[in-house]
Amino acid sequence: MITYDDFKKVELKIARITEAEEVAGAEKLLKLQIDLGSEKRQIVAGIKKSYQARSLIGREIVVVVNLEPRMVMGIESNGMLLAASDDTGPVLLGPDKDVPPGSGIK
Image (cartoon, rainbow, N blue to C red):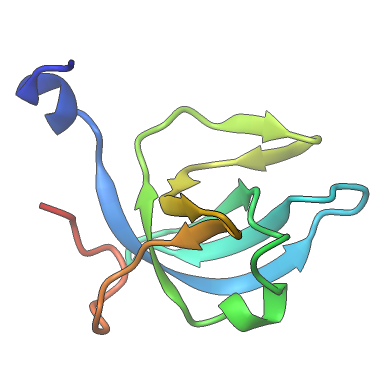
């Protein structure tokens, strides 16, 4: 169990995917360019088996924005998207209606 104060440290925001492409040589990874309203970032996500890159453009997702950057197959990832998981693989989480990129999750 974590405390409420620990949970408050996690910064979640809405991002809009502006570009998406496969990572060469990776069977699960997609490289995403995202818009967080006040800034643009790149993240790498293991969702390739469940989503085609071109179908993600314009989609809104929930992203953890205060993680330290991490190198994934030589590509810097600056955040982590949130997804559920079922028998078919990851299922992206997002708002049920359009909200501005950068909107906070409360």
